[in-house]
Image 1 (cartoon, one colour):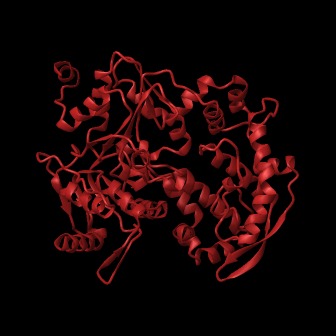
Image 2 (tube, rainbow, N blue to C red):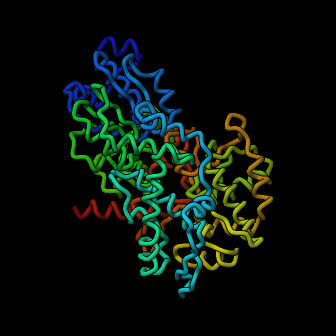
Image 3 (spheres, rainbow, N blue to C red):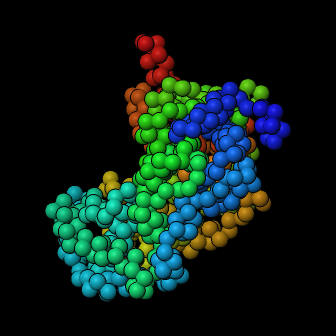
Length: 501
């Protein structure tokens, strides 16, 4: 223990000591780590206790893995799944990363695809629609990507992801028609003689299909709640190595991307880190409102000595970050900030926004688009407007309104006026992009998906998790004015339930 204190200059908490003791047993287990609860420090302490063994720290991206190398004990290799795979896959396959990739148009030509007449729902009616060869090619490529993220050993028709508004009979027809091309696309991707470029997901899948055994004694798998079936499948087949899954099950906000919550799915022993060092008890208490609604019975605790407060004022003049639900709201706030002369940093998906704006411009001039999934099904801007009035189209409606209200050129101009974080007055971010970050003063915006009807809150689990992530980014001041009705309603409902029990 003295050595631990010397190296880290920190006294482990009882919860951290429990995780260390569990790690020393040599069996796989889970560390449930709430927001700001010292997850990285705990992993460091574990690696120091296991320093006589060969360890591997797995992160989701290269930047995190690179940063981790300076934090962990000697003998811990810090990598991503992709870097592991790259080292073990035949160079004839990885060399294809340098080749140009096939465009949907080129792929359609190679496979000699012909237009398909199908039916789609617009409003309350079905209308005939021509599924162009390029759109079919995009579906084929996306299906291979979908297959690569799963634990399946072979592509299947289910990997073709089609919109819900296709007529069911036509959806079956499309799958039957395109699936042979999906199989061929996968074969071509692995064929060194096929001179088309590949994405990183191809060699990762190829490595996974080889049933690899990772030659280490233990694996620290960070952010395990966001693992996809492929990653989880690789780790579950490791019989020699102890696997320590680390993450927060309530911060799983990428389910729409195929993530599997390993923190909840795996029937393993677990330890918990429930004290946050980021904020005080008042922010923790608010976060617990969302956790209780998610069915969590173990509360999050703040640090009593950490001064933080909840702010309910309508206008927060001094703020470090504004956290939105959508890219559209982030863009709208950016426009307003630029007009006011604010120096604004943006942590929304700026590339996606630019692509959407360019695609909207193309559709308005009668050109078809293929690289923006939300718009690739439409022939003109009027069709997009009709789609926005359906339930399925509600997600893109705010972005469409932005284009209509401000114009494509003004939106692009605003995006080009974004400043670096270090010189900004404040940051505008989406909750998704804010994950893993923290600021002193945080404002929660009003575009989160919920309703309060007759004293009852209508909100889904995904949105609750997103709000839990957003509200736990604040260290000192958390402004929740915009979501105050939701918080008040949830607290009242939970108080009634507690009184009855």
